[in-house]
Length: 304
Ligand code: G1P
Image (cartoon, rainbow, N blue to C red; front, side, top):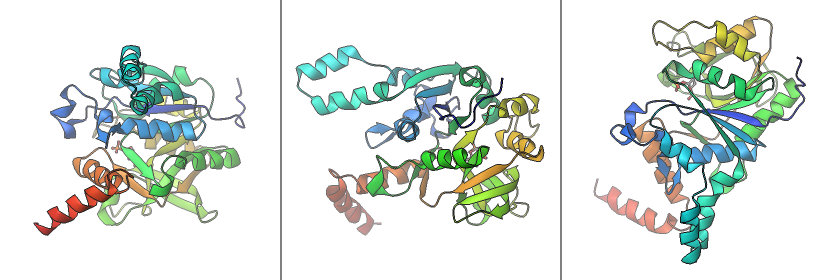
């Protein structure tokens, strides 16, 4: 069946099956996606970004020990009643927010076979339509003035509507840091923000990196990608099925792949420093805490 690729993109996949080893022992029982930025679990920022871009159905690719995340997407009626009784309306709104804004579907990835395998697990929930992929570790922000209504994913969807092929988000990365990412080669710069790509390589050495543009954790994928993922072998070095390799093969089959440049700030919630930095920045930009937290920080820095 041919799908209509002019159709709206309403489904997003968010892989959340990772072990979160860098956050042990916290992640022994609590998913790393529940790590908060201030009082909000980081996953809520990711879901909000998706919903702001028009996504209705979120497919979480999950694993054991992720119960807290599934519970978090559900309504807690007894807690809502308690808060109502105590007239805590702001708190009530906070706990109702995530369950209300989207439909949540959970599929399991029982073996840790990497991002490519995680996406493949969403195949039946996605069906034959283009979809968004958002990686939970990447909290992206254009600027703090626009936290709630700015959607980076929306830009990718706009590019998809124009080019009707796979779109990846790109960010310029300085020096050897590039070795931590999927890196793209540029065939043509279409305009300030849009690029036609000619290669994608997962975590190349600095010398072999085809550019300084790395793939960030946002993609628009076509359902055809599932055929490529099904054929993809487990990489013997990493034990994983690489999504980047599948997109690369899709490109080599004479399909266009595009990159959209992102020039804002990225917080890597996959490591402790990124998590700390996100909390500091969000606190310094929070209406309620900005002043008092800045004072506290200044005091601490004096003593370093
Ligand atoms: C994944 C992708 C990589 C991408 C990165 C962005 O890698 O495989 O291409 O650049 O996310 O965060 P991971 O960080 O899961 O190893």
